[in-house]
Length: 346
Ligand code: PEP
Ligand code: MN
Image (cartoon, rainbow, N blue to C red):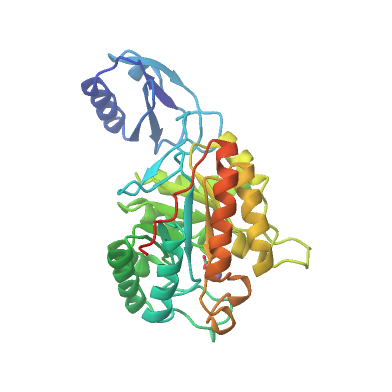
């Protein structure tokens, strides 16, 4: 059930309703909207008696939630969530969020070379895995905390916000210390203990769609994070497994408007994993922006042939620059913008 407060309800009245909900043994989730605050209630097994809440001062009405998810839905919050990372970097706002970097942090030199290139092209967020969930146990597994330290240096030296993956509860403890956004990968989309742990974090979470997950399953996975009190979640479409053999995965761009209709959470697209092929990254990036995504996550490597993971789908810095130029032209058609590339000193 949702408690819709009146538009003029005071913060004291909102707090009193939350206290009442907690006294009934449930968890209250006050979510401010542009006109009024809605309070989501979780933790109840059956229906909640509305009368106990409806009579409280400042309460407009109590409405039952028709969807299985309560907190990620537009019923609770009409306007899209904007995840604010500070320094003017947002995900879900007017400006598109472009996250770029290598699949994996391999060495300090490789990471810094890519960081310098993507920041010069106008990216404000940097990706790179320090923990790599690999299909084979014999493949490169990532540099772990040493990799996180390299990423922290990149943040300091290039002013980029860091997005990096946590693969389990232990790595999440470390990732949240070093990163600006915690990535939860496709393989972990239904790792419920990891989702609950991410829900207790103060850091925003980038949640990637599982390779065979439906939209409902993706939204329910996000619900796990919000239910623990972390409302800063960004969804990511990264391709699903189908019978096609011309790509690694099938990038399901139709999920973008579908997710946006149901949920207030921002959603971005990863055309690198979504196609698995370098030459398809720019075309699908254009399409992702055109379909209304809030941003992109792009794998960029300075020497893809030698990359320790996902070289086939990594573009090189000049191609990334081209991608940025193209989406700068497409974005205004959709009422969006892209950070201009910093002016380089002559
Ligand atoms: C990644 O972003 O490098 C990654 C492993 O992605 P996914 O979880 O989508 O496979
Ligand atoms: Mn990768």
